[in-house]
Length: 157
Image (cartoon, rainbow, N blue to C red; front, side):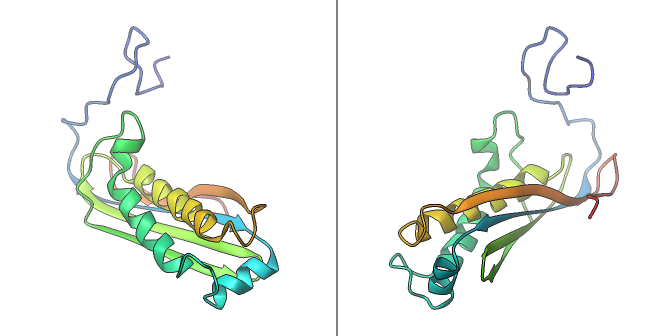
């Protein structure tokens, strides 16, 4: 199991020691989608959700979640994020979330970007479930990352 960095030689879980790594500028971009009925999308667009502005609340929830990633994901390092943005694009069939997280540090921000996307989409569900309980969250994935020893990476289109 030598390729699994979160397992020690004895197979026990551990937090990776990043103390010897160089501090570099790091960025990660993630995306995901929630599919919904045309009626639910139209209600969100029209501001008719009973709980309020769905996209505004989801955006703030995603940003807050990125800041709490190490509290949610075991063995993640707490990071001083320099920036988190969550963009939500509403169309007739759902909402696409794209999150960008940045830091200057010794480990990457992929988990922060993906956590922001996941929580933003869960918040859309929570805010709009009275409109459509059959909404489906999916396609959460990393699109790109930069910085660190492994350099830049981009997902295949």
